[in-house]
Length: 330
Length: 186
Image (cartoon, rainbow over all chains, first blue to last red; front, side, top):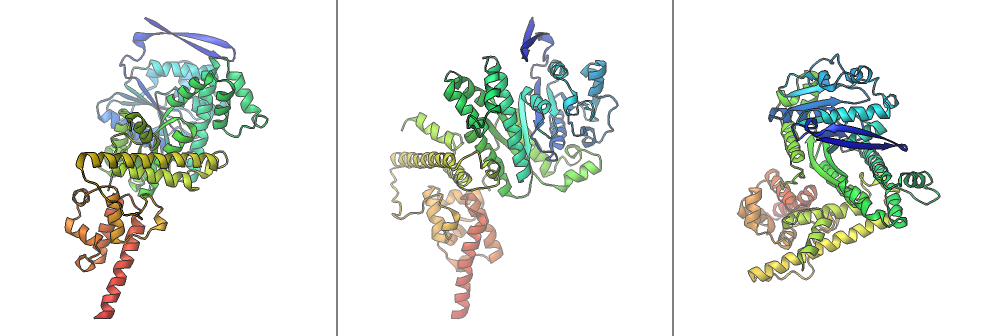
């Protein structure tokens, strides 16, 4: 059986034909993207830790580092920068499966990005589609994509492609601000893409570009006025919003009060933007993280009994079972 | 009340329909505080997320909490034939921390409003029943030294989803003034 995927872009379209049996042979084929907007919140550390946790629990995991700010996932695993990288895929057409290297942890492999090949605008739209297509074809149970910081379109599109969208933040205002920016950007692109099928992409773009004229102050108001002006879009938009499910992970908390920031962000995303946000869990600030990186030995391997390791295990389980963190009574 | 309506109220408070009374209260307090203050999570979007919108959310939250508490109380009355007489000027559950001074009777009132029996608190917090009783009745001479007492108060406050610092501070202030009085008297 073959599956045809039609991708529309700027008035032209492309048809990709995939054999279904080679697509996600191990069925689960879950693609998880880890992003969130701000750099330094611990995305790479969390990607490596989730990867190790899943691998240790018998899953076959591949991690792909597409951090444009500097791919360094290998350092978190205590290995040297692999010589093969996504550059070989883009420039020489070497298949992704040949680029994966062992990480020293059973069942866990890594494809590293390249600072230059993925630097913001240098990657073309078609290249991006090709990468997505090849990622989806990979035969791994879990594919973790470390997005790195920023809200660039390439980052956002990769985030949107993922089955599970994980957004990492830390309890401080800059990370919070950047996350709003990141999520709103992602939502805007998602809405634009989905309304393209109804011939409304230009309308959305026009309204957003001329937002002062239409007295639209925010993405939320854009959505509201779209619903108002084109009532038949109401259900479509509501569905798009509800389908936009993100998992929040709060890193580097220093007090129990900090945990409330996770619950609060979740609430605002749900009540204000109308999307489906879940608070998957938190990780305490711990020098062991920093120590393990310096010692070039992954925390999940060397400090597997630490609190941080347990917290990572707990929220990874939440992610696996699509459930929220339980706020425990102390 | 129809279950569907109740489900909606649970949704407003962002909790599952099997949430405990404490979870309901916890969710209510969090949301109330979140949408009524300019916190670090609101300020980055304060210009687009208007006060009016936030007020509307607050109203929904208030309504959901009131209705859920009401339905729970009704349920309890029906099933247990236990009608609790609420003190007429009872504390509104969820009142801002700043407005209340946490004394023993105050903690008791809050606990009763949540319909949690003392033994349940004791089981969950691992604080002895007798000690909890003494805390609530302010039998200060039966209480352990301040350092230990402080720990118990924080534990109990967390359990009731109250601000632990404030509870310990308020309560210990009363404890200390009793101690001072005793010294002066003897």
